Length: 634
Figure (cartoon, rainbow, N blue to C red):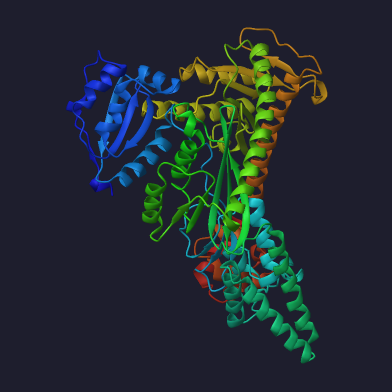
């Protein structure tokens, strides 16, 4: 498709003295009556708005007419200092290009999907003789069968646990699988058939995989019927132990089906979207139905642009939301909407191109599908009510932060930093982000401390490295013309020393427009006794019952929780490393043979060369290499 896109020539630029409506009128003279995408540019080169048109000449001409505009549109036109255009072969291509540019450039006056990370799925891997069932997120780069999306990782974990009980598929990594010499705990609690030690034949395991695939593909009733028939036959043959195992599997499958609320009878595969708009804010509630089951829902609160006509506000927001939502998600066969949208047929065509099959986009009026939409709309209305109540309280707290620290305006983005390590080992820096919408967990970042020159346990040096990497990247993104998220306030977990380290980095990088505050724990780390450090001011404390103090404590504690969690994960990974993995020539097969022969890596380390040679697959050279590896530096 990219080959069919034709960019406008630089000669179309207008004189620099023109702006607003005069500039747009001047541009319209040279625009073609063809589909394409237009960008409205502000005074500092920032993109104000990205739009698509069936006819660039007619659509842009509407801006030049100067009538029937909302206040937001009029303001956007007033700020416009330049325009850029790209013509396309079809309006569908223009729509797809518009979606990509909005997500990339994040224009101020466009409706924007704030959280577009991929949804978790269930994956049955097919690149191993013993297929693995696991949670997956991201691109479909691993050979296997993908089932989803699920609304949350919790929903996936719950379903995977039930499926393990029902189908006894392994969930361990290939590395663990290859090194097992006896069944693991999952086999003992009847959640794995232990293919790693051949307690199930290959044909039997493949049958379990096929049943799991059928169940997740919507054939749950057929699978349960087949298992029930087999259980009855075993009971009649007096094989009560095998019949009891099947009974437990059937119960696990029943629990999966029963946990899915609102399971529609006429909808096998669909996404349901409902939008509620109130007080200048919007909530889009999305429900996912796959294999005839409800696989969860999620509420989105898109950034609402005031360029949308008020009469069609909900439809316009939902229209913009849908294109961005499916830019990075798989498209189901049916999309159900609470409101009809201007580009419904155009979006359906674009979704067909993306999915490579027919996709329907409808607003149901009656029947079960309409009931699903009404249910989603109720959830959207309730979720927005809760959000508005939380935002009101959050706004008061940010006003308090502004007053306490003497900021020019309430902060839109607060970044809080903390370090975690044990005697300097597995050192990790954590950054959490908060603002008017509360904690923005998709913006959290961890920094594995990489410097080899730091003294172990040097917290100031760690913080300097973290901030240098964070703001060094921000500077590069800004130089490249991108629009990265820039904080208004930095909170450092620590006192004057951490504050000085942060200010040193900011000065080196030329960042002088971000407020920095150090938060030191009180004596004996008592909550409520925190001292706050600001550049050029004496440390001070807040009243113990001040709501702003409680808010700042929550921010600091969240940063502490996140940094400690990242540290524990890194430490756990180090602890799980097997010394045999570091030896060249010892792959999964030889490692398994060595562990089987000596029981553990410690047993291998104590073995003599003569004993190592006796292990299958280990020749004289490898035995000597293994022996030397464990005695290096001894």
